[in-house]
Amino acid sequence: MAQSYRTTLLAVMGISPAILTETVWALAVERRLIPEEVLVLTTTSGREAIRTKLFHQGGWNRLLKHLASQGFGVKNRLRFGPSNNSIRVFSRPDETGELEDLVSSHDSRAAGDFILRVLRGYTEDPETRLIASLAGGRKTMSALLTSCMTLLARPHVDLLCHVLVNPPYDSPNLRPPFLFPEPGMTHRIPDSGVAVRSVDARIELVDVPFVRLRQLYRDRFRNLPPSFSTLVDQVQGILGERQMPEVILDESRATVEIDGRQVKVTKAEFALLLIVARRLKAGRPWSSWHEIGQELDSLRQKELDRRNDPEWLCQFKDRRLDVKSDVRKWASSLRAKLGKTGDDPSWVNDLLPDLKKGDLPRFPAQRLRIVQKA
Image (cartoon, rainbow, N blue to C red):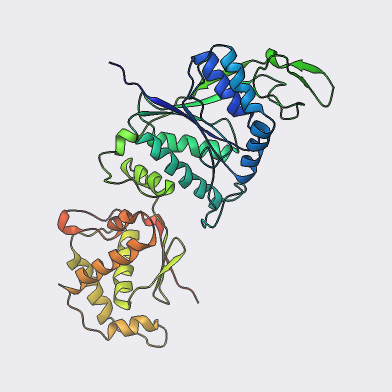
């Protein structure tokens, strides 16, 4: 027996709510499909446009009445209204309020996290089918929605769609704005004054093919990561394409930066990390911490020029070193410190591998920089 689903139509949207009414009309007329629920993800300006054009000006009710007059069963379906339950506004990057527009990379990351959280709620419900519309809003919104659907959508259940409307009905300058092929409605083109009939519009709903990756990782992660970018990185890791952070070691001051964030380390931990970085950049991997310990011991016993060599190296030379135990202890403490610099700490094992488990160093040398700042 075929699975019966509740259908939710989810759309990203800017300040042109016509894409929503066009999509609902096309689903009904072309697919004979009336979703139970409609949900829009947008900005504060998008919310105001929806409330004004669809509710204050009556566009949404006119659509429902038209569909009902054509014999479509809209009763207890197409649940959608001006409240925050139906129109959800992206959060600001610092989560101090609502997002007015997507104008920066920080805004885009926040929107990606927001879309991912909302989609998870629907794609983890076995009784709900999600139809996602990418037709509205900035191109960034459409791209983020497509990426999130790629990561979360279930095969043979969830769909991604786009709606196409022929000119001049696709123009936001029509007066009044076009919402759907509405009998008795006439629109005027401002520049020419030409009148066009609403019923002459041609709307086409397009299924957008996309790759579904959920099956690839669902058995590997106990819980999905909290952010969109982290999930992308982890899936790329499965594909062998994970983007590693940039690690910068300042040899003159014994400081470590991970993607611009400074990590406080001891002089001994820095010395170990410096040896690791040098070996990786020279293409000299290691299979035991004893190898690293021997180089650390050589560094400690090296005759230093206290006028030119950095102070931290002089201090490191003065300490005792147990090659057998100290190196493993420092490597362990470094893993813990470096792992706190981002949402996904798995990259640390590529830099400081757990050799007892047979792991090997695989951190890309091009993501390591050894500098000497004044």
